[in-house]
Length: 158
Image (cartoon, one colour):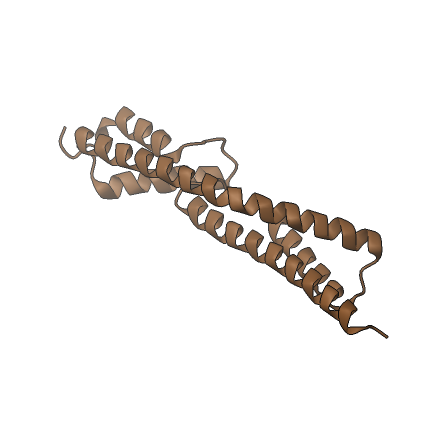
């Protein structure tokens, strides 16, 4: 039979694991949205499997069913993930600023080249599709701009 003190400890451990899972979910959602517009790499599907594992650990922790070694390692992992989540937000903000600057340069270059917005978006979508298929492009904006600049047929003002 568990005491009130043990139940409180189980709840605290469960809350920590849930908090880590939610932080990872938040990061994944944000990164997935960014990757869809070409501002971040694609989120690996394994990350969602890991979130599911954390959910299961949280359930077992709440019932006090985790073996001591698993409990200790799981809690240490969650504490490390939460510490990393705090720095992730800072890194993501810096990455967003860089992405906005790159996007602004892209549109400025499109204006200078006389390339219409629909043609520019078509090129961006093509590069993003290549990235999803495994192409090693790191900056879809620059790749699309270079392709459009190399093809005078896309220019609306030759």
